[in-house]
Length: 637
Image (cartoon, rainbow, N blue to C red; front, side, top):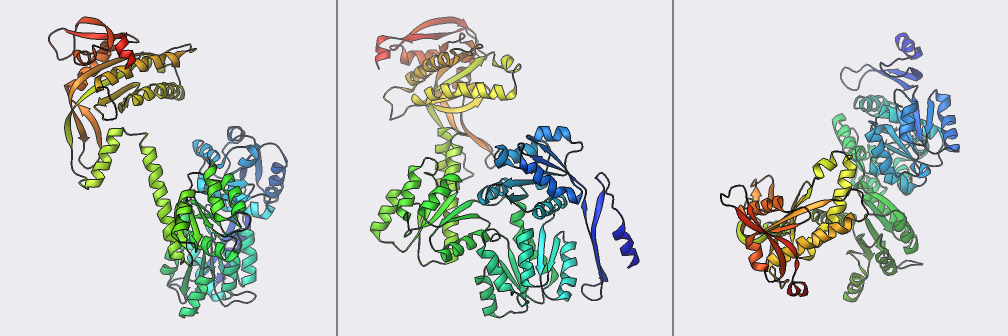
């Protein structure tokens, strides 16, 4: 006892950190429990920390300072993170961000913290509403606190963030359970707060917002079922996982526990490894970013609670609205990943709500699931016409609700991925991938010989120019130029095979939707690209100059690369190589055609012949043709 007391009375120093101050020390002596365990000694202390606050000048800084000052912490306030770090050496142990006050979105604030070497688990977001705090947690903030808040709430959040451990609240009226369970939780890396009846537990949960609640059922003041139900009905605490651990083990007891909103139910006596395993499983989702955000719209509080609870258990961030009008405001204010709505509601029906969402540009692509008993063909046709994604017919089970939501979100993710992937791979590669997925022969490597025209473009002197520019400026000017050039290629039915630095490789094949041959379309594209670059250069101090080469003939087009790891869908062969060599011989700002291209388009173009050209791999001097324009017939077609 004296040894423990002497430790508790000393100031603690932590290497490389500011001096720690003692808060409290508690100790218990007992026998029994886990083998070899004789004493449970818990020394709780907090570091005297330097805390940073990124916010615009105002009363918020004064309030935070008053909250942290009595605990010995110092506060540095700055409008930007750069300025904050310039004032502190070493950097603050914890940084508070008030993006809604300073005008910086949560994801940008966290990205800025990462860029400056600040760990996300040492960052706290101060939000103006529940939705912004949920968005901050999704972005990766370890904690988010809604304004206004109590000084004690902020202090606990700051000190727990510095410790970086999850908080479990243990509610049980048995001193023996506390003696056995508390050291087990501490040993496995959790912080622990204790309560000995339901009412005390509820007060502490509302004050501390623990990461998980572990509660008994039979307790004075308030039983565990009532405690769990009260937490799940409060929007501020509904997302906190609750594990009931009770000696009541009948089927009816378990059913009542889960009906009250419990996330898990354990029957005493509990094997320690089983308890820790269950807690780890529930808390795993709180160590990473939350899942998609779902907006639940229903005028029935019971339905809102039922649906919200089952989705939160799956890790979704859930926001609720009481009718269509309320839902429309919430959806446009904070875009959800999915909307789940009732049909019959006051002020705005589900049908009117769907129509309103589809009319808004911001929400028109959000998937919508309708909760309704209206499942006639007429109703289904009407809702599909309005833009509904899927139905959930009443009455429904929570498993059915989760399955529908998971399916619709999976389809939405796949659709977004497919749309995004089209920006990164050529149209030919998209078609090849779709064909391969249909055949199922993933190890198959396909190739075919096709007659095509190859276009190579390259910006002259860009490497030297880019060496004098920042990487951001290089990417910006290159992408802006490509925006103008690629449109011309697509208009003529070309397939952009790849970008090679500042060069473009495009393929033109015969297509039934174009009357002109692929050679002529490639020539028109090359001429149009030069004219588009003229427009791009207008008014620029350093205009870009481009060469373009064209060659036509048989090429091998297909899968090039590893059979199982990574492959390209591209063209290879001598025709491809010669197209690139014609580009290198083209005059600045010009288009150089090979004889094979010129022979097919000679009736439509005006050219100037170049003779005596030497190409790598060809012994004899060659002729090629510089495009000067189009003949009257060529322009008219």
